[in-house]
Length: 386
Ligand code: SF4
Ligand code: SF4
Image 1 (cartoon, rainbow, N blue to C red):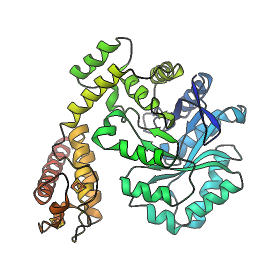
Image 2 (image 1 turned 60 degrees about the vertical axis):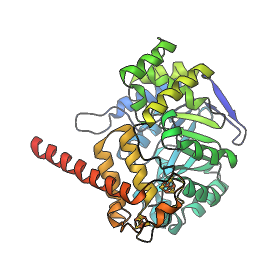
Image 3 (image 1 turned 45 degrees about the vertical axis):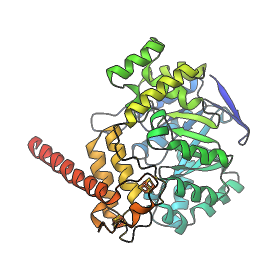
């Protein structure tokens, strides 16, 4: 299995890491523990040396399975990654207790890669209030954490703030060839490059979306290499980025594991021609989004509290990736924080600042109307199925 020596970390990490969040489930919806252990051990035997879990994956069962799977292997031959998740602790004491419990569950004295989980504008203050960074820095000093980082799902200004807030060793980002352009993930990646922070990649296949495109795009990729899976192009794209340390894939099936091992076990960077085809496909997918917001936030702050780039981001995700339920729930998250488009009074201040010349007040009204339409459709569907 191909490894990359990451100079800032001093570790040689396999290009493929096991993301332990999508194991097979039993009929009652709980994780199939035996299968999870078997898949993790199979990954290790195939050469993977990086395993990433979190207390919220499979309601805590993922951590348990990882601890069980790895407890008898030589601890110096693999890296464990785990996370501190804001929704799981209430205060400073329960946060600390969670960390010690994780060490126990993983049958280890130290965690190689420890992350503040999913920093975003809704939980960042809680992490600060509970002194999470101070505690984890202390754990790093004591050697219970080897490398400290955070995972991130928000916009560039908050990423810059989070990067500047501590001495980090690495950051985990959602990266794939579609988000690279459609969601401006290239800019987030550049923040890490500028700060010399290695990037762990999550969602390289966009939760499976890039494992099977439409017939036209699949055919374009098959024409490049009939033997290569559609997912392999996504995995190769991110692994080919210089500052990427490891590509995490949440593998549920043996076939996915074997395919990823085949792709990254003996890594070949994408050629210019292959990159051009991916770029064409991405451009076509991006055209589905008709509000060209880049997330620059020049239009902010709105005097009525509307989070304009967030509303447009939620809309863009829906247009490009589909999934009406996710659109409705993400938009409702903005509404619940009083940041929804319904607060807009059409004063027009924001539109004057927008370098993309977006008619912000009217586009906000349109997104809100679409939200109401989609919500009504979902409710009608649910009522019909009840
Ligand atoms: S037009 Fe609407 S979104 Fe823009 S600044 Fe005024 S109230 Fe806020
Ligand atoms: S200024 Fe325009 S492009 Fe920038 S975040 Fe606001 S709406 Fe988007």
